Amino acid sequence: MTAPTLTPAARPTAPAALRAEHLSRIYPSGDGQVQALAPFTHTFPPGLTAVVGPSGSGKSTLLNLLAGFDTPTTGHVLIGDTDLTALDEAARADVRLAHYGFVFQNHNLVSILTAQENVEFPLTLAGMPPRERQARARELLAQVGLEQRGGHLPSQLSGGEAQRVAIARALARDPGILLADEPTGNLDTRTGERILTLLQQSAGAGRTVVLITHDPDIAALADQRLHVRDGVVTPD
Ligand SMILES: Nc1ncnc2c1ncn2[C@@H]1O[C@H](COP(=O)(O)OP(=O)(O)OP(=O)(O)O)[C@@H](O)[C@H]1O
Image 1 (cartoon, rainbow, N blue to C red):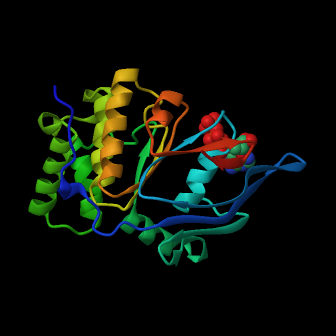
Image 2 (image 1 turned 90 degrees about the vertical axis):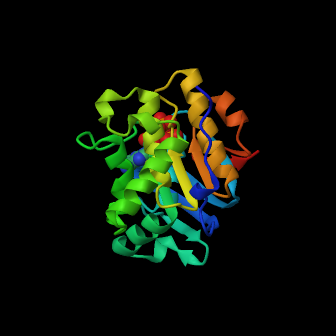
């Protein structure tokens, strides 16, 4: 099978600049505390940024803060002119829907929905009419090479196929920012490379893609790398 390609239809209309300013996170730990992320300032450029580092170094902490899933101890996350950290949860959820797509290690597809329905789901939430969203979901599944699998449930898909559906779903609303937490972690090398190709194409379409990976070979293919060690983030 030839490698799937993402067409211009999957491009975000207005890429949003993602910036961390003096972002840090301290968690309570027993009687003391752990600095999961030391103060970190960085503008994420459009393209693919790999976040690498040993287990427990702070990678997920950083991603959760960038997504607004967690509240920083200090600092801000800026999406263009919007300060995500200054918003309440409802407003953060709106910003996430408008600007972010997410891909997780365990694809997080809804088990009782078909691949097609999973991709349609965010479009349903956005109020897109049925015919339009069905066509959009079909197009996205074709772009990830799964036009024949729309009627399959997640349990009827391989791990790599399910992850491709998850990418199609993440791209459904043309987000400017795609955050991916170990999306290749459960996959064999070849399947992982195929997922990486899709992420690279997403990034090539003008998105800001941030990818957590343990795999140095995958990190080497990113446009830039952030190395995390004991909560300290250092660019290449
Ligand atoms: N909710 C929390 N409460 C307390 N400590 C936490 C919490 N989340 C993370 N930590 C701690 O913060 C540090 C960084 O954790 P984090 O999950 O960000 O690492 P990671 O690099 O993503 O690890 P892995 O690669 O194993 O997923 C660790 O010491 C972890 O135990």
